[in-house]
Amino acid sequence: MNDISKTASYRLAVSDREIFYPPIRKLLREAKSVLSIAHPFSDGDALGAQVALHRLCKAMGKRSVFLNFDPIPETISWLGANEASFELSRDDHFDLVFLLETTDIQRMKERSRFFEHGKIRIHLDHH
Image 1: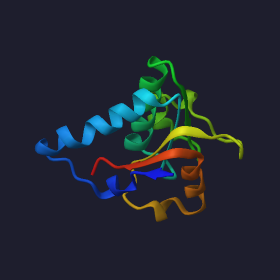
Image 2 (image 1 turned 180 degrees about the vertical axis):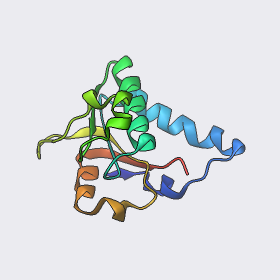
Image 3 (image 1 turned 120 degrees about the vertical axis):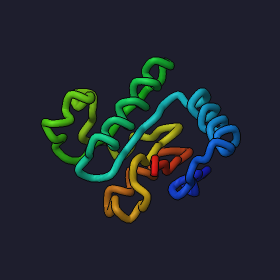
């Protein structure tokens, strides 16, 4: 299984963009299905990242699911809460899974098991 989880602490500098972005673009182009998860009790960063990725994947004709675990605060529900899934079948697998907006997978606790639903896993945080 490919794992690009080293990106969890990856800090983008202008010079890194040429190295970092093309592999993810290539993986996105090749994937037929994409799942995203983010930290518990989503905030605007987490939900916004998931919605943006979800909409990009849908526009590319891919099967896309963004999984949320907790009620989405009313103050950010306008970002696209109605597009979220709140459960995932144990047998459901994806070509690509993104863990977004957490620098530490331990923050996910038992929910980190959803990261295992992908052939390729990318752990990505904007910090």
